[in-house]
View 1 (tube, rainbow, N blue to C red):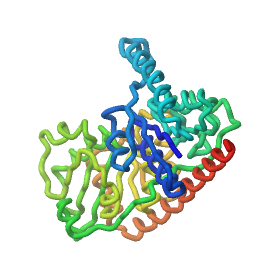
View 2: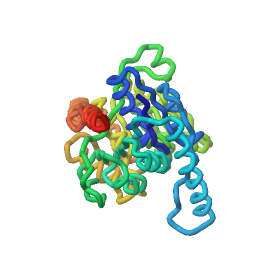
View 3: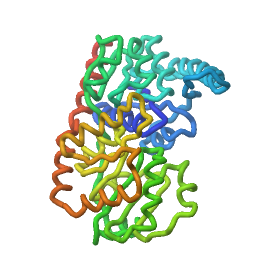
View 4: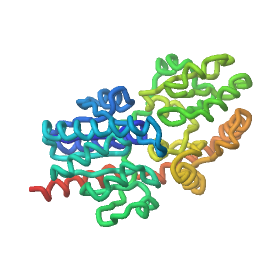
Length: 363
Protein backbone atom coordinates (compact mmCIF):
# COMPACT_ATOMS: atom_id res chain seq x y z
CA UNK A 1 0.00 0.00 0.00
CA UNK A 2 1.23 3.49 -0.87
CA UNK A 3 0.27 6.54 1.20
CA UNK A 4 1.11 10.22 0.82
CA UNK A 5 1.20 12.43 3.91
CA UNK A 6 1.34 16.22 3.61
CA UNK A 7 1.35 19.08 6.08
CA UNK A 8 3.88 21.79 6.74
CA UNK A 9 5.10 25.06 8.14
CA UNK A 10 4.79 24.26 11.83
CA UNK A 11 4.95 21.25 14.12
CA UNK A 12 1.20 21.64 14.65
CA UNK A 13 0.68 20.59 11.05
CA UNK A 14 3.57 18.14 10.73
CA UNK A 15 3.32 15.99 13.85
CA UNK A 16 -0.33 14.93 13.38
CA UNK A 17 0.76 13.57 9.98
CA UNK A 18 3.64 11.71 11.64
CA UNK A 19 1.28 10.30 14.28
CA UNK A 20 -1.12 9.04 11.59
CA UNK A 21 1.81 7.58 9.66
CA UNK A 22 2.96 5.65 12.72
CA UNK A 23 -0.53 4.20 13.21
CA UNK A 24 -0.63 3.08 9.58
CA UNK A 25 2.81 1.46 9.89
CA UNK A 26 1.59 -0.52 12.91
CA UNK A 27 -1.42 -1.79 10.96
CA UNK A 28 -0.02 -2.34 7.45
CA UNK A 29 3.31 -4.14 7.15
CA UNK A 30 3.59 -3.65 3.38
CA UNK A 31 3.10 0.13 3.53
CA UNK A 32 5.25 2.72 1.77
CA UNK A 33 4.84 6.27 3.05
CA UNK A 34 5.81 9.40 1.13
CA UNK A 35 5.84 12.87 2.68
CA UNK A 36 5.08 15.87 0.45
CA UNK A 37 6.22 19.26 1.73
CA UNK A 38 8.21 22.43 1.10
CA UNK A 39 11.90 21.90 0.45
CA UNK A 40 13.88 23.33 3.36
CA UNK A 41 10.78 23.56 5.53
CA UNK A 42 10.71 21.87 8.97
CA UNK A 43 8.67 19.03 7.47
CA UNK A 44 11.61 17.90 5.32
CA UNK A 45 13.91 17.25 8.27
CA UNK A 46 11.17 15.71 10.42
CA UNK A 47 9.86 13.42 7.66
CA UNK A 48 13.34 12.10 6.92
CA UNK A 49 13.95 11.54 10.64
CA UNK A 50 10.93 9.21 10.71
CA UNK A 51 12.11 7.36 7.61
CA UNK A 52 9.62 8.72 5.09
CA UNK A 53 10.64 9.49 1.53
CA UNK A 54 10.39 13.26 1.14
CA UNK A 55 9.04 14.85 -2.06
CA UNK A 56 9.26 18.62 -2.42
CA UNK A 57 6.39 20.72 -3.72
CA UNK A 58 6.47 24.47 -4.55
CA UNK A 59 4.14 26.49 -2.33
CA UNK A 60 3.62 29.84 -0.61
CA UNK A 61 1.11 31.29 1.78
CA UNK A 62 -1.26 33.72 0.03
CA UNK A 63 -1.21 37.30 1.40
CA UNK A 64 -4.59 38.83 2.20
CA UNK A 65 -3.76 42.09 0.38
CA UNK A 66 -2.76 42.87 -3.19
CA UNK A 67 1.00 43.28 -3.49
CA UNK A 68 4.00 41.80 -5.29
CA UNK A 69 4.08 38.86 -2.89
CA UNK A 70 0.51 37.97 -3.84
CA UNK A 71 1.43 37.52 -7.52
CA UNK A 72 4.55 35.56 -6.58
CA UNK A 73 2.45 33.30 -4.35
CA UNK A 74 -0.13 32.70 -7.07
CA UNK A 75 2.59 31.73 -9.57
CA UNK A 76 4.37 29.49 -7.05
CA UNK A 77 1.16 27.73 -6.07
CA UNK A 78 0.19 27.25 -9.73
CA UNK A 79 3.51 25.41 -10.14
CA UNK A 80 2.68 23.47 -6.98
CA UNK A 81 -0.66 22.24 -8.35
CA UNK A 82 1.03 21.11 -11.57
CA UNK A 83 3.78 19.35 -9.62
CA UNK A 84 1.16 17.68 -7.39
CA UNK A 85 -0.56 16.23 -10.45
CA UNK A 86 2.78 14.75 -11.58
CA UNK A 87 3.37 13.24 -8.13
CA UNK A 88 -0.07 11.61 -8.06
CA UNK A 89 0.40 10.15 -11.55
CA UNK A 90 3.88 8.87 -10.71
CA UNK A 91 3.21 7.31 -7.29
CA UNK A 92 -0.41 6.23 -7.81
CA UNK A 93 -1.12 6.26 -4.07
CA UNK A 94 -3.93 4.35 -2.42
CA UNK A 95 -4.53 7.17 0.06
CA UNK A 96 -3.56 10.84 0.52
CA UNK A 97 -3.73 12.53 3.94
CA UNK A 98 -3.29 16.25 4.62
CA UNK A 99 -2.88 17.84 8.04
CA UNK A 100 -2.89 21.56 7.26
CA UNK A 101 -0.66 24.27 5.91
CA UNK A 102 -0.86 25.54 2.34
CA UNK A 103 1.45 22.79 1.04
CA UNK A 104 -1.19 20.06 1.49
CA UNK A 105 -3.83 21.78 -0.66
CA UNK A 106 -2.38 20.93 -4.12
CA UNK A 107 -1.69 17.25 -3.40
CA UNK A 108 -5.12 16.64 -1.84
CA UNK A 109 -6.86 18.54 -4.62
CA UNK A 110 -5.13 16.45 -7.30
CA UNK A 111 -5.83 13.25 -5.36
CA UNK A 112 -9.54 14.05 -5.20
CA UNK A 113 -9.59 14.87 -8.93
CA UNK A 114 -7.96 11.50 -9.58
CA UNK A 115 -10.64 9.71 -7.51
CA UNK A 116 -8.02 8.65 -4.94
CA UNK A 117 -9.18 8.23 -1.36
CA UNK A 118 -8.27 11.33 0.62
CA UNK A 119 -8.84 13.01 3.94
CA UNK A 120 -7.80 16.18 5.73
CA UNK A 121 -7.21 16.46 9.47
CA UNK A 122 -7.73 19.85 11.15
CA UNK A 123 -6.03 20.14 14.53
CA UNK A 124 -7.30 23.58 15.61
CA UNK A 125 -10.65 24.84 16.83
CA UNK A 126 -10.72 27.33 13.95
CA UNK A 127 -9.90 25.66 10.60
CA UNK A 128 -7.16 26.96 8.34
CA UNK A 129 -7.68 28.07 4.74
CA UNK A 130 -6.40 24.76 3.33
CA UNK A 131 -8.86 22.68 5.34
CA UNK A 132 -11.82 24.86 4.36
CA UNK A 133 -10.79 24.86 0.69
CA UNK A 134 -10.48 21.06 0.67
CA UNK A 135 -13.53 20.18 2.77
CA UNK A 136 -15.90 19.56 -0.15
CA UNK A 137 -13.26 17.78 -2.23
CA UNK A 138 -11.81 15.13 0.09
CA UNK A 139 -13.68 12.03 1.30
CA UNK A 140 -13.46 12.87 4.99
CA UNK A 141 -12.71 15.93 7.14
CA UNK A 142 -11.41 14.98 10.60
CA UNK A 143 -11.58 17.60 13.34
CA UNK A 144 -9.99 17.77 16.78
CA UNK A 145 -12.47 20.19 18.38
CA UNK A 146 -16.24 20.22 18.04
CA UNK A 147 -16.03 24.03 17.69
CA UNK A 148 -14.38 23.59 14.29
CA UNK A 149 -17.46 21.92 12.77
CA UNK A 150 -19.50 25.11 12.33
CA UNK A 151 -16.80 26.70 10.15
CA UNK A 152 -17.29 24.21 7.30
CA UNK A 153 -20.05 24.68 4.71
CA UNK A 154 -20.21 20.98 3.89
CA UNK A 155 -21.23 19.08 7.05
CA UNK A 156 -21.77 15.62 5.56
CA UNK A 157 -18.19 14.32 5.74
CA UNK A 158 -16.99 15.76 9.08
CA UNK A 159 -15.94 13.41 11.90
CA UNK A 160 -14.71 14.41 15.36
CA UNK A 161 -11.59 12.38 16.18
CA UNK A 162 -9.37 14.51 18.40
CA UNK A 163 -5.68 15.15 17.81
CA UNK A 164 -3.41 12.12 17.20
CA UNK A 165 -0.13 12.07 19.13
CA UNK A 166 3.05 10.24 18.19
CA UNK A 167 3.24 6.75 19.64
CA UNK A 168 6.93 6.70 20.52
CA UNK A 169 7.32 9.21 23.37
CA UNK A 170 10.05 7.95 25.67
CA UNK A 171 10.23 10.00 28.87
CA UNK A 172 13.16 8.12 30.42
CA UNK A 173 16.56 9.78 30.74
CA UNK A 174 20.05 8.97 31.99
CA UNK A 175 22.74 10.78 33.92
CA UNK A 176 24.53 11.24 30.60
CA UNK A 177 21.44 12.95 29.20
CA UNK A 178 21.41 15.35 32.15
CA UNK A 179 25.11 16.03 31.69
CA UNK A 180 24.60 16.89 28.01
CA UNK A 181 21.80 19.28 28.93
CA UNK A 182 24.02 20.85 31.58
CA UNK A 183 21.55 20.28 34.42
CA UNK A 184 21.06 18.18 37.55
CA UNK A 185 17.87 16.88 39.10
CA UNK A 186 18.67 18.59 42.39
CA UNK A 187 16.04 21.26 41.70
CA UNK A 188 12.94 21.64 39.50
CA UNK A 189 13.38 21.78 35.72
CA UNK A 190 11.22 24.03 33.54
CA UNK A 191 10.98 23.47 29.78
CA UNK A 192 9.84 26.39 27.63
CA UNK A 193 9.01 26.52 23.93
CA UNK A 194 6.76 28.78 21.88
CA UNK A 195 5.85 26.24 19.22
CA UNK A 196 8.30 24.84 16.67
CA UNK A 197 9.09 28.33 15.31
CA UNK A 198 9.42 30.00 18.70
CA UNK A 199 7.60 33.01 20.13
CA UNK A 200 8.80 36.63 20.13
CA UNK A 201 6.99 37.47 23.37
CA UNK A 202 8.20 34.39 25.21
CA UNK A 203 11.77 34.94 24.01
CA UNK A 204 11.61 38.54 25.24
CA UNK A 205 10.34 37.52 28.68
CA UNK A 206 12.94 34.76 29.09
CA UNK A 207 15.71 37.17 28.12
CA UNK A 208 14.47 39.57 30.80
CA UNK A 209 14.59 36.72 33.33
CA UNK A 210 18.18 35.77 32.49
CA UNK A 211 19.74 38.40 34.73
CA UNK A 212 17.57 37.59 37.74
CA UNK A 213 17.36 33.78 37.76
CA UNK A 214 18.48 32.80 41.25
CA UNK A 215 18.90 29.05 40.83
CA UNK A 216 15.45 28.10 42.15
CA UNK A 217 15.04 26.03 38.98
CA UNK A 218 16.75 25.10 35.73
CA UNK A 219 15.21 26.68 32.64
CA UNK A 220 15.46 24.92 29.26
CA UNK A 221 14.31 27.24 26.47
CA UNK A 222 13.80 26.76 22.73
CA UNK A 223 13.97 30.03 20.78
CA UNK A 224 13.16 28.80 17.27
CA UNK A 225 15.91 28.69 14.64
CA UNK A 226 15.25 32.14 13.19
CA UNK A 227 15.35 33.80 16.60
CA UNK A 228 18.38 32.03 18.08
CA UNK A 229 21.14 34.51 17.16
CA UNK A 230 19.10 37.54 18.17
CA UNK A 231 18.25 35.88 21.47
CA UNK A 232 21.91 35.23 22.28
CA UNK A 233 23.00 38.78 21.45
CA UNK A 234 23.56 40.76 24.67
CA UNK A 235 22.23 37.82 26.69
CA UNK A 236 23.31 37.93 30.31
CA UNK A 237 24.72 34.49 30.99
CA UNK A 238 23.19 32.44 33.73
CA UNK A 239 24.23 28.86 34.60
CA UNK A 240 20.59 27.91 35.19
CA UNK A 241 19.40 28.98 31.72
CA UNK A 242 20.03 26.56 28.83
CA UNK A 243 19.15 27.84 25.36
CA UNK A 244 18.40 25.77 22.24
CA UNK A 245 17.53 26.92 18.73
CA UNK A 246 15.39 23.89 17.87
CA UNK A 247 14.70 20.61 19.65
CA UNK A 248 14.17 17.39 17.71
CA UNK A 249 14.38 15.06 20.73
CA UNK A 250 11.51 16.66 22.62
CA UNK A 251 10.82 13.39 24.49
CA UNK A 252 13.93 14.00 26.61
CA UNK A 253 12.88 17.56 27.45
CA UNK A 254 9.38 16.43 28.42
CA UNK A 255 10.90 13.64 30.48
CA UNK A 256 13.29 15.76 32.56
CA UNK A 257 10.82 18.62 33.10
CA UNK A 258 8.60 19.27 36.09
CA UNK A 259 6.75 22.16 34.44
CA UNK A 260 6.19 23.07 30.78
CA UNK A 261 5.72 26.55 29.32
CA UNK A 262 4.26 26.66 25.82
CA UNK A 263 1.95 28.46 23.46
CA UNK A 264 -1.41 26.74 23.20
CA UNK A 265 -1.40 25.33 19.71
CA UNK A 266 -3.49 22.18 19.43
CA UNK A 267 -0.51 19.87 18.95
CA UNK A 268 1.44 21.27 21.92
CA UNK A 269 -1.60 20.79 24.14
CA UNK A 270 -2.11 17.22 22.93
CA UNK A 271 1.50 16.37 23.71
CA UNK A 272 1.38 18.04 27.15
CA UNK A 273 -1.71 15.93 27.90
CA UNK A 274 -0.01 12.79 26.61
CA UNK A 275 3.01 13.23 28.88
CA UNK A 276 0.83 14.32 31.85
CA UNK A 277 2.65 17.52 32.76
CA UNK A 278 1.43 20.71 34.39
CA UNK A 279 1.90 23.81 32.27
CA UNK A 280 1.86 27.58 31.92
CA UNK A 281 0.21 28.43 28.61
CA UNK A 282 0.94 31.62 26.70
CA UNK A 283 -1.50 31.71 23.76
CA UNK A 284 -0.30 33.51 20.65
CA UNK A 285 -2.56 36.52 20.21
CA UNK A 286 -2.34 36.83 16.42
CA UNK A 287 -3.84 33.41 15.60
CA UNK A 288 -7.05 33.17 13.57
CA UNK A 289 -10.14 33.92 15.68
CA UNK A 290 -7.76 33.96 18.68
CA UNK A 291 -8.15 30.16 18.80
CA UNK A 292 -5.06 29.61 20.97
CA UNK A 293 -6.64 31.53 23.87
CA UNK A 294 -9.79 29.47 23.39
CA UNK A 295 -7.68 26.29 23.48
CA UNK A 296 -5.85 27.42 26.62
CA UNK A 297 -9.03 28.29 28.53
CA UNK A 298 -10.18 24.68 28.21
CA UNK A 299 -7.08 23.55 30.10
CA UNK A 300 -7.22 26.37 32.65
CA UNK A 301 -10.91 25.67 33.41
CA UNK A 302 -10.07 21.99 34.06
CA UNK A 303 -7.20 22.86 36.42
CA UNK A 304 -4.58 21.45 34.05
CA UNK A 305 -2.78 24.71 33.29
CA UNK A 306 -2.16 28.29 34.27
CA UNK A 307 -2.32 31.02 31.60
CA UNK A 308 -0.54 34.31 30.92
CA UNK A 309 -1.68 36.42 27.97
CA UNK A 310 1.03 37.86 25.72
CA UNK A 311 -0.07 41.41 26.54
CA UNK A 312 0.61 40.72 30.24
CA UNK A 313 3.82 38.72 29.81
CA UNK A 314 7.05 40.01 31.34
CA UNK A 315 10.10 38.27 32.75
CA UNK A 316 9.03 39.25 36.28
CA UNK A 317 5.50 37.85 35.91
CA UNK A 318 6.73 34.62 34.31
CA UNK A 319 9.37 34.04 37.00
CA UNK A 320 6.79 34.72 39.74
CA UNK A 321 4.31 32.25 38.24
CA UNK A 322 6.99 29.56 37.83
CA UNK A 323 8.10 29.89 41.47
CA UNK A 324 4.51 29.80 42.64
CA UNK A 325 3.91 26.48 40.88
CA UNK A 326 7.18 24.67 41.57
CA UNK A 327 6.83 25.31 45.30
CA UNK A 328 3.57 23.37 45.33
CA UNK A 329 4.52 19.89 44.08
CA UNK A 330 1.06 18.50 44.91
CA UNK A 331 -0.60 21.12 42.71
CA UNK A 332 1.84 20.40 39.87
CA UNK A 333 1.10 16.69 40.12
CA UNK A 334 -2.66 17.32 40.04
CA UNK A 335 -2.26 19.62 37.03
CA UNK A 336 -0.48 16.80 35.22
CA UNK A 337 -3.22 14.32 36.11
CA UNK A 338 -5.92 16.70 34.87
CA UNK A 339 -3.98 17.37 31.68
CA UNK A 340 -3.85 13.62 31.04
CA UNK A 341 -7.62 13.41 31.50
CA UNK A 342 -7.96 15.89 28.61
CA UNK A 343 -5.91 13.75 26.24
CA UNK A 344 -7.51 12.02 23.27
CA UNK A 345 -5.79 8.69 23.79
CA UNK A 346 -7.90 6.98 21.17
CA UNK A 347 -7.63 9.70 18.47
CA UNK A 348 -5.10 7.68 16.49
CA UNK A 349 -7.27 4.55 16.71
CA UNK A 350 -10.34 6.48 15.57
CA UNK A 351 -8.46 7.83 12.56
CA UNK A 352 -7.10 4.39 11.71
CA UNK A 353 -10.63 2.94 11.83
CA UNK A 354 -11.88 5.66 9.46
CA UNK A 355 -9.00 5.00 7.07
CA UNK A 356 -9.64 1.25 7.07
CA UNK A 357 -13.33 1.82 6.31
CA UNK A 358 -12.41 4.29 3.56
CA UNK A 359 -10.03 1.84 1.92
CA UNK A 360 -12.52 -1.03 2.29
CA UNK A 361 -15.11 0.98 0.36
CA UNK A 362 -12.74 1.01 -2.57
CA UNK A 363 -12.66 -2.78 -2.83
